[in-house]
Image (cartoon, rainbow, N blue to C red):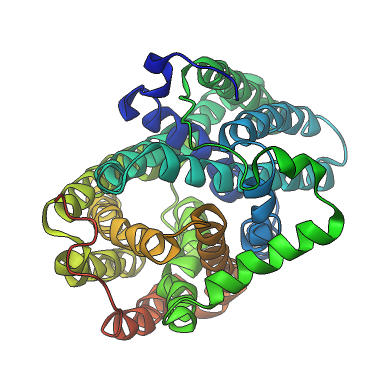
Length: 433
């Protein structure tokens, strides 16, 4: 085993948890959110945008298929660094792809590369958190992780949109403007990667599941290890109910997430809010993210103080009820940027506050010797719950109109609310002892 100084092994979470959460969120946001605005600006239809960008969830859906490899071979730290290198190269390739006549097909291929690397990074990073932090630290840092995930929304989903709008006024070439801005995003990502090469700790427990023998495994032994990992997960108590809950809990959000950006950018005569790129970037990815970050920090603090079970219903209500903010915006189509920002702030604060409970629930049912692979299974099911409803949300919003569509989104939160009543959670889980 490589020797490491005690200082590096014991480096506090504040040195690396925020930056790892941030860098892990960036490729996800680029693939799932920034892609929507990018294709909207480049003239792709709403139906095509929601369909093709929702399919980009697939790597996160099927990542459990290769998650055991992260446990079997090498350390979590090794996988984290390697995937960050691949994502940085992918972002640079994405910028270059927009300068070709076949930008749509080529950029989708690059988005797929980024998505697969990002899904693999998530597996390794989630396992790294659970190895490098004890259970109480995990609960305490959930809010920090959520906060920096949302800050990444500003860098990866808000600031680039604002910069593109400003640059397009000078170049009068939207594709070129996007290409230049994506190069800046790639450079920033690579700078963070360089930081992680030196700052990420090397916990003694961060080894492959089978130690030195992992490199000598036969194909049959790898398959046996795979099967054992999946069997262990599906032997957990109430596991099928937990899977159904994970699939359905975000049913409304899955549809809204792909449409909200289009709704804000669409002209008012089409039922949208008619925001410019700069206004969208400020409202959705700055004001909204600040509110969401505050909600996430509060949620993590309250769970660490009172435990998940005691806070569960308050947090579930907080994540679902503010969806009515979108109904309000679609119905009134307010002109005031202040009103739009306030409505978004309410919705995003509730979401940030409530989603903390959902993350902790997945950590709880993943706990055990194979926690990395099992948490990947949970997030894979979560991604499936996002992909399939989101794929057709663009066509559904066009058929129903934005107001009726967001009412439908609110109706879709009911299954998650009902199933919450049947969750089994330990009284002390997540609470500081």
